[in-house]
Image (cartoon, rainbow, N blue to C red):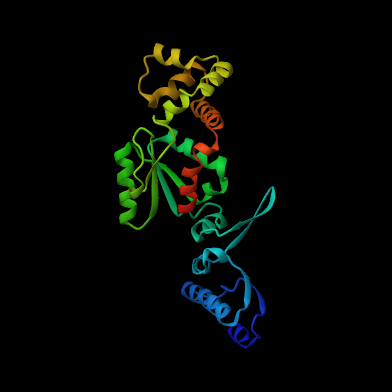
Length: 255
């Protein structure tokens, strides 16, 4: 193959199927670098298909084009990072980025935010609830120490620290308060479940936002997970994608 590439006239077109076959990982990487070199020297155009993570890593982002087939047909993704491509090719088994959040409510909120913008990102990341804001910060520091890619999304009342890879949810309050104090969410809960959010929380003397879902779902005779998901999606519909597209963009660019 190398001999053919070198002896062919300049500006030749080559289409190669999975050139990594029978090569070990280092050879895959070096061969991909060679393909870039021969294109630069002889102005060839080379199109090759691959499932090799090593070959993907050797390619510049503008050289990667992923074709992804699902029930809606075939979609193309240009400039995909090698880690995200690897995650998609493995159907989510290889996830290179960990995103830390404080609790399960925050994890679901972030998941649904990402789903609204680009669902494919979810196959490339792990969203991990780890505790309070101190635990979130320490989790990112630990991942840095062991060379694992990570970032964190903290509650809005804590705020971001971008230099430490700590980002923040929209708003000014913890996610539970942002969701359940949203007018559209309160109206939906009243109409769908017959529950007055403010009155119920006041009557049950629930001040800790971590127990909002449990209290309101119990009053509505609803499953906690279902109730929380319905409230979150109503909230996201109300605030619109513009409120969280920058946050999702940060995660997308890191994955």
